[in-house]
Image (cartoon, rainbow, N blue to C red; front, side, top):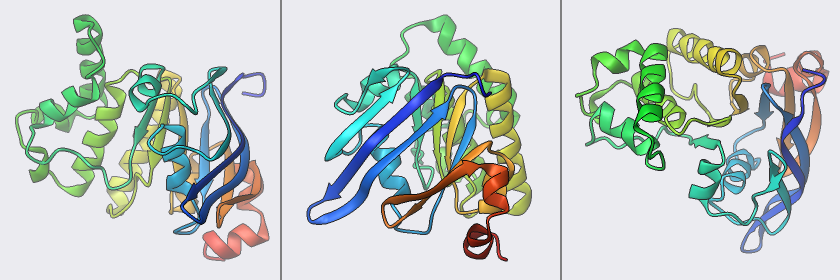
Length: 241
C-alpha cells in the first residue's frame, strides 16, 4: 500500500451553511485500494464532508481531486459516473420498490446490459439473502438487510471508491460483523477504495489502514489505524478507555 497512488485528495476544503462553518480547511488523502476511517462525534462534520465530496453540497473553497481530476464543481451524477459512490447514513432505500428495483436505481447510469448483469451477480454473491428476496419490497426488510441493500445498490454503479456513512448504525452485533466482513471483501477482492464514516471506532480502526479525526469541522488528528488505537486521547474519547 505504501507505493499506491492517491485516489482521493482533499485540499483546504471548507464548507459553510449560512453563517455556520461546517468544515474548515480540511486536507487529507486516501490511497488506491485502502480502507480509511473518518472518526468524530455527532456534528463534527463527517456527513457534510461526504456530501461535499459526492457533490450533494457545494464547498465554499478548496479542491477535491478524484483519480487526479478536480470534481468539486461536478454534478453528483457525473461524480458517480467517474467511479465514486456514496452510501448515505440511514440507508435511504426506496421502501415501496422491490429489492431488485432498488438495485436497478443504483445502476441508472449503466447502459451496458452485460455490465449490469455482472454487477448484479456480484451483489447477489456478496449478499445471497438479497437474491432470495429480490421480489420483496425493500421496506419490509430488517435494518441489517436494508443496509445490505444500500451497500448493494452502491456497488451497482461499479465504483472504484465507496464512501460509507455509518454502515453499522442501529445494527445488532452479528449483523455489524457481517457488514464489516463484506466491506473487507469488497476492498480486497474488488480493489475498491473505501472512506468509512463510523461511530463504532473500535470496528472502524480494526478494518481500516489509516484514520482521520474530525472535531467541530477541523481535522485534528491523522495516522495509521494502529497509531490511533494507541493514542491516549482517542482511547479516552472513542474507545471507552
